[in-house]
Image (cartoon, rainbow, N blue to C red; front, top):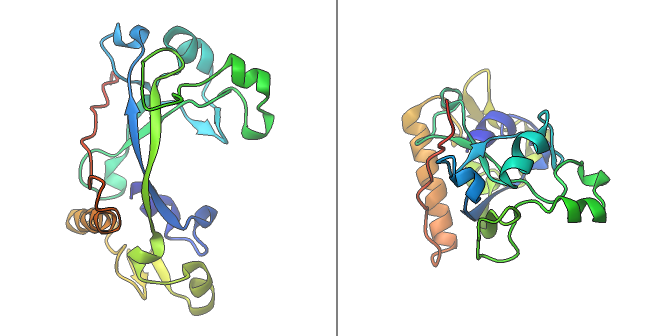
Length: 212
């Protein structure tokens, strides 16, 4: 929700033509090297097109700790959402290369942390597992069907930064309003619960236990 409100819904068409809110269940386990430091998470590292783009990724992260999950508290003040928004970094295969540069040998030498099954062992190349847990359409939130086409022809907008309101829809009104932000999250959870009644509406989030 933080990312959608801050980066996506104020554009026509939406940034990157994003059309859905995907939900995933992530299981994780720290390696013995990281757990030995009393931590479950490493520091967050930025990825761009599947490549770790902070300096010395391998030397500071993968080599000493394995392909571990990183975290970083987000800037909560920019968007009103309940809880503690958090960025996570999950290194995949060959994290030293962009998508279009990855090779078979790189994938083998840098296997990343994604486990082949839901049995997350905490070994250096098996620190997390991702399972799809459903999706909802962004059109369902705003009530504007085929938004990218409609906004271009009618002037409707999901959100306008200058007025802090939508045009023709109210869902994203009040970017910094805590009450409205909490209501948005409740409605999103309700939509997921209706669409996927056999899945839990939400799961508890682990503490991002990095230093400072």
